[in-house]
Length: 101
Length: 101
Length: 101
Length: 101
Image (cartoon, rainbow over all chains, first blue to last red):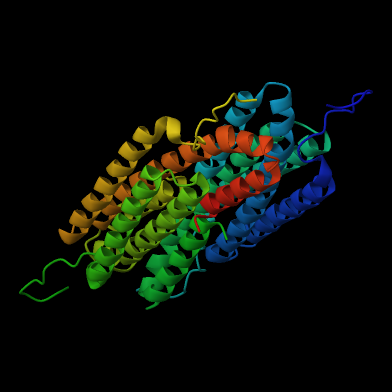
């Protein structure tokens, strides 16, 4: 379905790689912020509020990656006869995210 | 209920502050690892597995902080006549952690 | 600390027992609605939306019960010298709710 | 790709419809069990343990439905030129399940 020369395989999240990296750097900064809060003996409830914000930010990154998988990897996988394998992998990832394990 | 001189207020998580900081530094390293994975165009499902691991680690940190709140802050709050306020704060934190918001 | 005759032990959620039962009956009805949807071969995404609504409703019931535990059981437990045990039980419950296991 | 006469459209979860219904009936019974526990003033922590079990059972039902969507609906949608729409719907469902809203 593609003409030669074959383009390099497109990762599911390539389109927004810079966005993803920017979000992850922000998460890294948030984690460092929580370290400072703990180091300064800040009130535990305030620290927990920050941790919830980090979890929400990581959920967004994860949903962005899953979205790329559902749109790109699964389509390419289907064309390559690997649709079942792709669906298995995605369901495994969703299950781990829901159970956080 | 305590005699003067008043001891410095004990943060709920003081007992294991070093443990908490060690865990948070490990989380920070895990986030940097995910940034490298994204930068290297690693397969999205593998990146998602790492993100689930980070979220599980943050859940443990959060449970440790909540535990400190339940044991220390709530008792001190009760002695200071602020039991309701302490319970309110804790329930708010639990709700945010469950809904990840 | 209380004078005789001893009042019957107050369950953490007694105050809003009727509310809790009303919510649970609504959840039961929602589950039956999902059964009908599946039986009628309704579109899977619509069924999933209903399941998310049920889970949100159960989260609210759980938060209401935890709230009662934090306010009533923990106080009574503290007066009975069982504060640690009460905190252990609550943290176990929070952990199970967060991990959904 | 299919020969006529066209088979009736296969719902994503048809293959295991009986299993799904059996699981949902079990969930319904678990909810009724929790109603009885509340009615009998059972200890709130024990009620919470049951609610966590129901949430875990509903997670399994939801993962089963998502799995069907990923395997059947998305493939059929792709063949019908509706791959983007299918992926949108699935990501919406995953987001609601993760945030339980």
